[in-house]
Every structure is written in structure tokens, then in C-alpha cells.
Image (tube, rainbow, N blue to C red; front, side, top):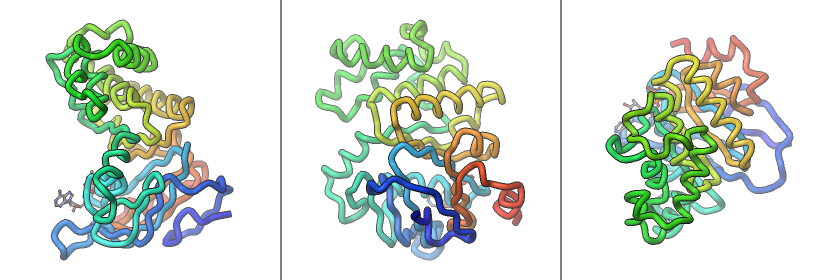
Length: 267
Ligand SMILES: Nc1ncnc2c1ncn2[C@@H]1O[C@H](COP(=O)(O)OP(=O)(O)OP(=O)(O)O)[C@@H](O)[C@H]1O
């Protein structure tokens, strides 16, 4: 039995596999201005195949933590490992590139290229691979990339829209294209920052359901933030709550109580 995080206010333990964690942070700190600590001594471990929701009130540091964990923001202190490699000043450029290749991203704003086809947008997910310029458009992409793009679209149930312009799709459909773009790379880790925030309740649940099912089917580790507590509890195996840059609790989703949520969001 291993603690999920050593700085939790309430320690919960769950049986975990013996393999090394996919992500391991010890005493992680982050400050943007060298004065205010946005993240203040975060300890956490995330294992391969887990689905983890990150919750907390506005400004508590969720997005900063997501971006720091995968090296998009440099950390200020502590140690961090992702895919078994150090992340931060001590990691080489090659390690950072490798880490990004193993990670898919989905954000609240899906950032599709509006005038390009749905399939081209999905193939853009392969930028960074050898011959990247071919990811510019599905018509330049090698057959194998087109096939992967179409398969990813099929998984989000949009294969029939492959040749439509991206901006001809609804918001929920565009977010599903963004999921396909993240999946086309066949990542080990999927990071999603408020993926359903701009969607109506039904589309939001559909998108979260899709995430959860695809990650489970492909053994992808999912780490996402949400302000919707139903999304956090229903689609995650574990919930980590942040408060003022610290881990408040870290426990299985089914054990999160209304009292936990009250203490998380009460000023
Ligand atoms: N690039 C940046 N430069 C300076 N300060 C930043 C930057 N990004 C975030 N911050 C600050 O860090 C703190 C945490 O922001 P962050 O976006 O991580 O919080 P959050 O929990 O994701 O918030 P929300 O739920 O509103 O999205 C905030 O005080 C914010 O102003």
C-alpha cells in the first residue's frame, strides 16, 4: 500500500501496481515572479492507466500544475519525473521532445484551424514527428498518417465529417476533433484542461464519457481539470484537490464526500 501523496490533509491509501509511477512529483514548487508560490510543495504520483481529476477553486494552481508536470512551464523547486525521466532544467532537449511526443493535449478552447478540413486538423497532431511538414494537410500526409487520422476520427464517431471544414462543426463536435487530434499520436498520457467547460451539459457529458472510455480502451493515463464535480467524480478513478497551491486531498473518486468539496471550495 502506497500513499498517493504525502502532503494530503487526509491520507487515503489504495492498492497500486508495483511499477514505477508515470509521473512523480516531490516537493514541487512553482512561482512565476519569484515571490508568490503558485504551487507550494506538491507531492504526487500518477500510475500508468489511471484517470485522475484535478479540482480546486479559480486560481488555486490546477493549470499551472498540469503544464508544469509535462515541462511546459519550468518548475521552481522540488523534483519531478515523467515517463521515468527528470523534467526541468536537468532534462535534456531530447528527453523533453520525447516526453511531448508521448503526451496528448486537449484544452477548453480546441484551437482547430477553422478553414482546414477535419482530417487535416487531426493530422496536425503528428507535428513533431519526422517529416512534420507533411502534417500541414491531409493531402500532403503519407497514407499511413491519413489512415491513423481516419481511425482516430472513427473513434470519436466523426469519420463521416473528415472532409468538412472544421468551422462547419458544432462546438461539441469540434472538441471531439480535438480529442482525435490528441489521440492520433497514440500518447501514453492525455492532459486535458477543462475539456468540457465550453459545452452544454449533454455535450459535456458526452465528451467526458468519450475521454474516459477511449483512455480505458487504449490504456492511456488521463489527467484532467474540471470545475464540474460530476465530471470529476464520475469519470475519474482518483480525485486530487488543490487549495492555495497545496494538495488538500488525494483519494479514490468514489470516496469523495460533499464535505470534501465544501472544504475545497470554501474561502
Ligand atoms: N503565465 C503566468 N504568468 C504569471 N502568473 C500566472 C501565469 N499563469 C497563471 N498565473 C497565476 O498563477 C495562479 C494560478 O493560476 P492557474 O491558471 O494555474 O489556476 P487554476 O486553478 O487553473 O485557475 P482556473 O480554475 O481559474 O483556471 C493565478 O494567481 C494566476 O494569476
